[in-house]
Amino acid sequence: MSDVIASRCSYIAGRWVEGEKSFPVTDPASETEVCVLSAAPLHEVRRAVTEARRSFDDGVWTDRPPRERAQVVRAFLDRLESMRDELVATLVAEAGQPVPFAETTQVEAGLTLARATVDLYLSLPEEEATGVPVDELVRGRVAVSVRRHEPVGVVTAITPYNAALLMALHKVVPALLAGNSVVLRPSPLTPLSSLSLGVAAEDAGLPPGVLSVVIEDGPAGAELLTSHPGVDLVSFTGSTAVGRRILAQAAPTVKHVALELGGKSAQIYLPDALHRVGPGAAAVVAMTSGQACSAATRMLVPEERKEEVLATVSAVYAGLPVGPPTAPGTMLGPVISDGQRARCEEFVALALRHGGRVVTGGGRPAELERGYYVEPTVLDVPDNGNPAARDEIFGPVLTVIGYRDLDDAVRIANDSPYGLSAQVHSADAAAATGLARRIRSGTVNVNTGLLSAYAPNGGYKQSGLGRERGAEGIRAFQEVKHMVIGELAR
Image (cartoon, rainbow, N blue to C red; front, side, top):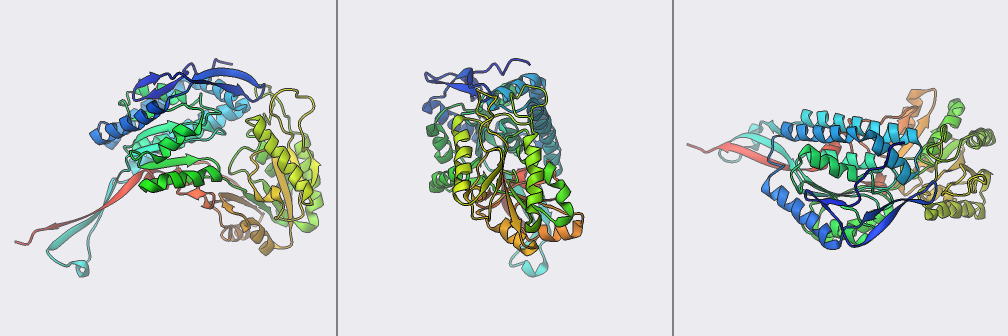
């Protein structure tokens, strides 16, 4: 494979900035050091915000016509495309993700979605005008009511470790298109791939301050970025616990906050669709090792056929190749850290203490001495109250729960503090769609799925606020100004 991205420090306001403190990036597949990065000192994090504020207030980016901004963003994406091989190598090394996932989902799909977002942005009106009915006239002669979409200002974008490049593009591209200035802060666990955005910004000619990439290894810089009065919007993808803290940090200055948080998604199988449980189970853990907020880790099946389902999904999991992400055929790499592996093991133990049983997996692959590997695990739990069915584990752990009837299936699916995603499977698409309408979730996939720049994604309940992707995802980075325009009486 190619070498990883060469950059080793933050890109702030048009310059590469080193600090006195450094920290390692670890390959979770081998527990070896990928590289050492320079951490941005707090005063440089602050400077990233002040320079973003200056660039926005001076209009060096936001005052450009939309098509001119789009042209620069396309050049930015082309530069990322030219780093394709280094990006794949970097994503594999820093996150332990199998090559096909890094190549196809993060790089290829990420860039495809980003380019489609440019097209979508250009199709949206900057201003929408409507006539005012006569009975709304009070004085003078009102000619028109105008809804104008304007950039929100300075955006902090905080991204997770599990899809670092994809999530960065979901935030940075629509924010830039809308005319904002952005400070990107990637997860300290997988920061290297995000430095490619600094390279692309520099080479594409983005004005200094319009996009900064801040690398740091602790919470101090992130807290500054979520509380600084110069920031207008915080866009965060990560855990619900951290999302709550961000809301508190942003509250004193009443910032806009967009949150894409945790999930405990349900996949419901009607009796006529049980032949699909094998592929459905594999999709939970394949390529990501279950480290996806939208992973459907609760499988709901008819109680009377639960044992049949358990046998099927256990056979599938037992046959999934687990190993180094660069090895041909690998379907599951490691989880991100030793702490995340311990979390998976803790929830397996909790499931057992609360009446569940391990059908397959539950431990560490004996043949892999190094790396943070977890066996793909199937848990048979008696009900939705089991801890493994309540909390987001973020690992290759599937719980199988039986339901009495379809009303019970909906009750179980909705009995969660989360509401990010769900699935319904049935040969009767109309019946499945009717069920989908009853599920309290931001996305419900009926017999299929869709990852599109034109389709929004986001959660109900404690799975988040706002939407990414789609027109809603672009409008999230804009303010709405209402203008009433009339003529003076003569």
